[in-house]
Image (cartoon, rainbow, N blue to C red; front, side):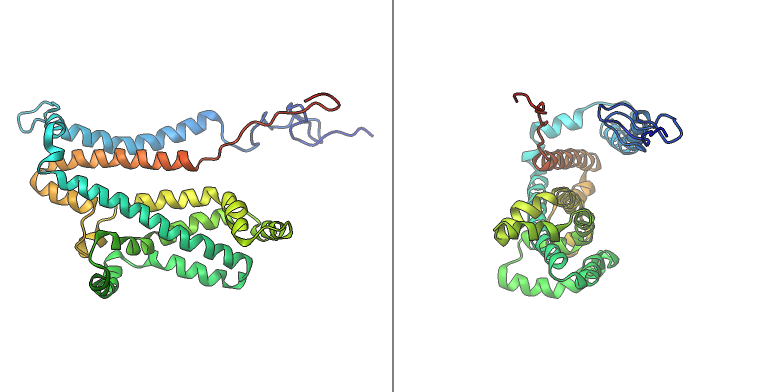
Length: 302
């Protein structure tokens, strides 16, 4: 009786043979059911076009001369020559406030959420449903209702610690909590944190080493995704800052749009570019750095 291999890649990367003698569909170094390169390019191109059309429309709007027709870059040139240091300086201040709020929100959410999730998974698995309900609950509460509940708290906080814009980080932490939770939880479901922690403890590692050197590196993708979402939500938030009388990027753009809608759209384009570069920087800093492993021949020198 002849023994044939199942469908799959062989050791040298060639196609395998199925039980019926047909060549298997596994490609070299790929996934059996992954979409082809053309399908991936088509999907990414469609998504890119979906986001590019509004941006192109915004650029075209800023280049209009007005009722006379035609296009020029006079508004961009005037803004570059002195607008950022003149009457529109408040936009730069508001942008700095939003960036500071984004950093503070990410730190608050991750420092509280990641250790709590790990503790629940390792020591108190029965509390997982309660934890999920608490973290998902803010997404069902409208922002205006959330502000009504937070107004007395912020009134007391203003008397104790001042009414600086940094206090919005606590409200934003509640807002981004459901998104950060789902991102980290999805990564956590694919990692056996209990086995990893027990193995590290058996080898003599303390809980600090287990957390920062064993568990957190395995949750890098989820933590990075949570940071992405937190930054995007904070840079685009308007309702909470407006109702609590704080100045961030979105409230400043609304004020500018009442005086000059063209300049407000220019600032919106610059804010989109800045947010994209900031997210790209976060992705580069948190990306895994892997080195190709060199194969050592059997019975030979390395």
